[in-house]
Amino acid sequence: MDVGAFWKDIITQNRSELSSYFCDDAVIRWHCTNEQFTVEEYIRANCDYPGKWKGEIERLEEFGSEIILVGKAQSEDEMITCHVTSFIRLRDNKAVEMDEYWADDGEAPSWRKELGIGMPIH
Image 1 (tube, rainbow, N blue to C red):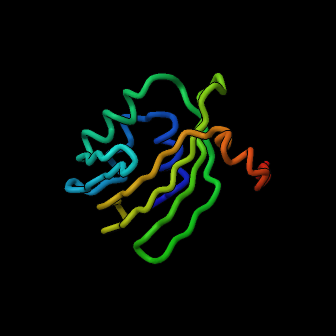
Image 2 (cartoon, rainbow, N blue to C red):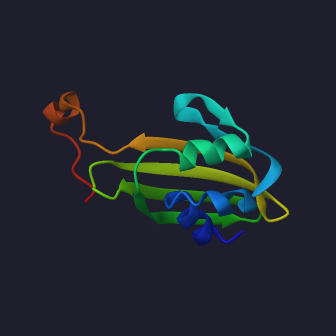
């Protein structure tokens, strides 16, 4: 699988290409919202999500038929930024399982700031 092309097609909501990266019987899970999708449902959820997006792969690990991708997605107006960690299992060079954990970026909660611990990453 060309992971760079896959990520670009996800971010640009390229409906016509996304199915080519998945086995017909693939299962996609979004654990943070307790949702499981077929390929067709995943493409609808991804491509019908409002707005235009840009993004980048921040980390990529490949282990044979397993891929771990950490990506940053941002709305074109830069009002929304989130990160995703994707665990992708391949069969015949296509995704057969994808488990994703999406999170909105934001500030540390006030209770943690009050502890005076940690510092910004960037």
